[in-house]
Length: 353
Ligand SMILES: Nc1ncnc2c1ncn2[C@@H]1O[C@H](COP(=O)(O)OP(=O)(O)OP(=O)(O)O)[C@@H](O)[C@H]1O
Ligand SMILES: [Mg+2]
Image (cartoon, rainbow, N blue to C red; front, side, top):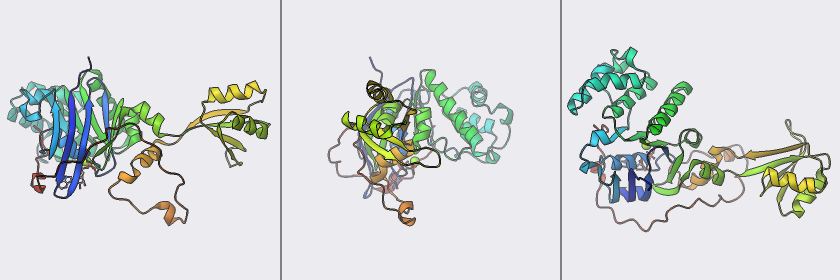
């Protein structure tokens, strides 16, 4: 039986006339990292706040282990989160910050040194948290999320602004937490980062579900995979592949590649076999994928809330040709119910404990 730790069903949030989350439905399972991906303003933080009971849904439900956060019998032992790493008293030491959190939540003080060790902050535990770098603040935030040894963890953009070393550390730490059997939901607006961190991917744009799949499925679907082909009898190769029903484009020489063909609609194996059957020699046969960020932009491009100036337009180039590709299957929502709550829930306390 598949266990569902977080279940979001028809979740909708209106802030006045802004629809922040729009009939969102997805589930999050234990033992893997689930990436929650969307451009700025897509509704990731709002969704996470509703899962954590910090914002009230306009419609729909968000449950953890089958109940709304507010009804969990042991909330701190069930869910931990990091929404804002800078949420810490600047003059408190890391250890005192965690001791205060533990005391105010009825958790044993012994756990403080354990979590400091887990996130690698033992050596700086008595330093002022206000003087911490962003990377250290993130670690302290993660330590706080782990205080109750929770089964479910939510992290909102934990790698934002971190240097490469900090990013790698967070990525490995999330994977480690998932490997322990925990449920890990982590938001990001970078597909390339999520592709390295997560196994499953829930993608949203303008509050709506765009896709819910494995990372591999999303990447396979969203990126154009083509095959680069080169051989001494290029014209005959081109004809052979066209006769076989494949899309073929001749690319003239560029500083890196001699003239070659770009073939779509087949794998390298299929192209190689077709040409071998006609005894056409190959000097190059290589699969190539489009960039992840390009794919993400294509899928979410019309869902982005604020567009920057179009670089191509500024440079005098025309827009990229072709309509956006189809989308992976996502739940088609109905019309969201009229909003009942206006903007005064917005001051929700960022701290979860
Ligand atoms: N408290 C609030 N009051 C009014 N509007 C809000 C509030 N919180 C979020 N919004 C609006 O809801 C939409 C979704 O915002 P949200 O912060 O959830 O997106 P996000 O995906 O987390 O974006 P980012 O990547 O920038 O963090 C945006 O249009 C935002 O302006
Ligand atoms: Mg956010």
